[in-house]
Image (cartoon, rainbow, N blue to C red; front, side):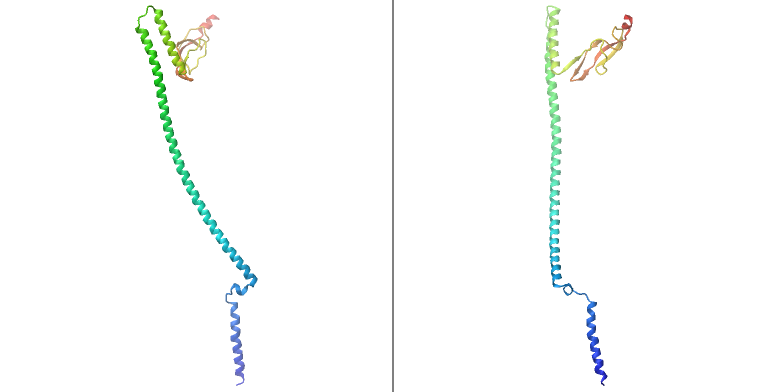
Length: 218
């Protein structure tokens, strides 16, 4: 009977020891592990983390707002570009129309002036003249009037001198003839040409020397 109390004491010790061993297996909290100073430091870090999170969120909001502003600006630039393109196309159409009108008016002005020349020629032919010299004088005056029209329009005559070199762009060779001028140079002008502002309107028709006369002289 005396052994039973000993066994009872041992059982109680076993039951008390078992709870002391469980905390090793259980998850402990930071408060249980950290000192008061470390806990304060962790709290400060947590506060910093939350502030950083707020800063990041604000940055995201700012970036998103800036992106939307850029998109709005891009849309505005695209709209303005389309307007500019439309304005440029309209300008080209107006400029083309204006150029056509100017050319038409310029042509009309030249025609009006040529009509005057024609009328003068017609009068010179239809009027009675005492002699040929009187008719010739009237025609010469009309020719001078026509030359003034050509001069005002920057039209010049292509009338090369004999012996000059042939320029294919300005001279049309009709045939080769016997001449005292050097071979392949212009012998004579059959019909003068005309050019306007360095643009050939009509090439001068010329004959070219075959050089035979030059050889005979030797």
